[in-house]
Length: 156
Image 1 (tube, rainbow, N blue to C red):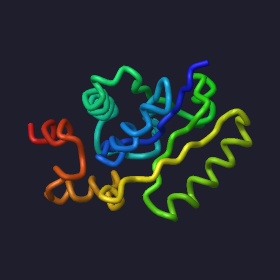
Image 2 (tube, rainbow, N blue to C red):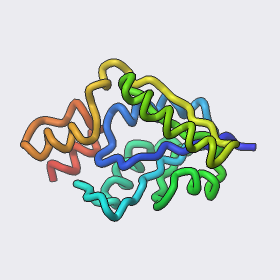
Image 3 (cartoon, rainbow, N blue to C red):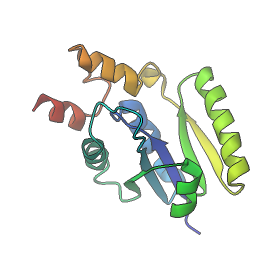
């Protein structure tokens, strides 16, 4: 059986922290699905298509990484794509407490699903998509927070 992991998030935009987690997880799994959650009640800064394209461009040479979108419960999407693992990055102790609760509920809903946590590299700890959006919205330099493909597309 293939080891399939789901890496869910909004990726609005994808950050260097996300990229680091994914690159470090590739050897652990046969396939990683970067799952962009679609929440119609949430306003995103960047279009779904733009976010998908950025992720695909960053991982163009990584056949084990694919990008999909989903609505609804993450565990239901895991069942649909036959993922046995949810991949999550942890920046802080607060992230762990938050993610642990979600992971435990997911395990209750889908007992064969495990959550795998990878620690963020220290240099990426302060970076989050919401901080990137705020810096970008206010004209700041995000080039050391996001992949080059994101910077290049925003400069166009």
